[in-house]
Amino acid sequence: MQLGVFSVGDVTPDPTTGRTPTQHERIKALMAIGKKAEEVGFDVFALGEHHDHPFVPSALTTMHAYLAAQTERLVFSTSIAHITTNDPVHIAEQYAMLQHLSDGRVDLMFGRGNTGPVYPWFGKDIRDGIQLAIENYDLLHRLWRTDVVNWQGKFRTPLQGFTSTPRPLDGVPPFVWHGSIRSPEIAEQAAYYGNGFFHNNIFWPSSHVRRMVGFYRQRWEEYGHGPADTAVVGLGGQVFVRPNSQDAVREFRPYFDVAPVYGHGPSLEEYMRETPLTVGSPQQVIERTLSFREVVGDYQRQMFLLDHAGLPLTTVLEQMDLLGEHVLPVLREEFAKGRPAHVPDAPTHASLLARKEAEGLPERPAHESRAALTHDEDEEVSA
Image 1 (cartoon, rainbow, N blue to C red):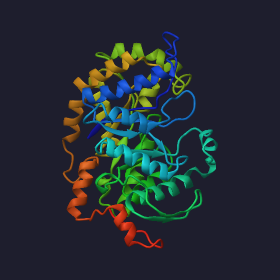
Image 2 (cartoon, helix red, strand yellow):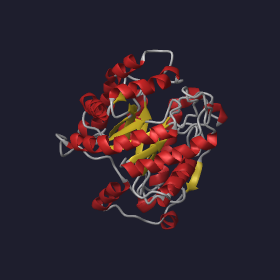
Image 3 (cartoon, rainbow, N blue to C red):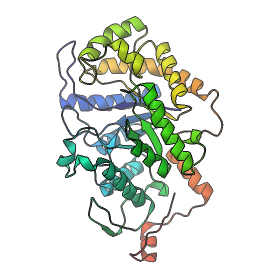
Image 4 (cartoon, rainbow, N blue to C red):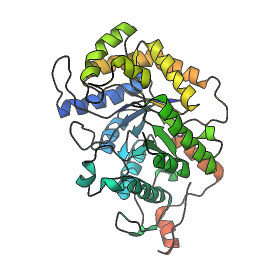
């Protein structure tokens, strides 16, 4: 089980002080959270792409490269990167570069993005969202696996004899998760390619989560990737943790009551009952997180949102210390119990490289294969 921290990088006033951090302060805070994630024992740190107020993470590869240079073990991911409004060629090259700089410590979670104005800012139409996600990922998948690409689609200019550079590290593309909260088409896409499916279930009841993940697992098996329980599943979740539950509820309530994503709707208690939000002690976080397995089966990645709603950096870091000392070791031990041997771990660069070498697939420099091909054909070089 991979355990991680994800952030959407919102710049939200602290309701207890009325102070709003500057963008510079928030960016620096995100970097501090990333470094803390490795220090306390998390496996993954993910940032979500945004281009609109009040968010700051617009340049994810820059931010992750900064952290990669200052860490040794942490895997960097996205929560999410836009597969709809970003050019697949740009994604292929930016993340392959990050993969090299981080020695393979990178994977991606793609999504359509949930803010409509972003589409026209990047020359796209939100009404094409699903089709853009499908077409753009199809091209990206080929760019990372095919040395010389000839391609034509609906939403971008054709490619003729194109090779993205750099090529993926060791000929192994970054592992991809497809993130969705409500679109079965995205779960279908993840299953078709044999990629991971991440359900960011922080706003949804367990019945909805069960249906979405169940559909992905069913389609995974029907596409021939293996039994349904071998599909690669990730879940979101958000916690606010203090040594005892009374302090946690008392301290988090003012943030919950006015937060843009929570406030002025169901009460904190109702929200905790209906969604994965856990506000309480380390033991309560452990028990609630372990219960997610009863909804979706054995899964591979659990991500926690810790730094939203105007919470100050010091509070976020204090929570990470508590989670690292009291929660993460127990979750790893308990999630391992009873897990069938054939259920895989979350793919990493090392595991994907080992699989490639075991399958005996050849690795060939791009310039050599380019000379061997005509512009009328592509050549698959790695799985």
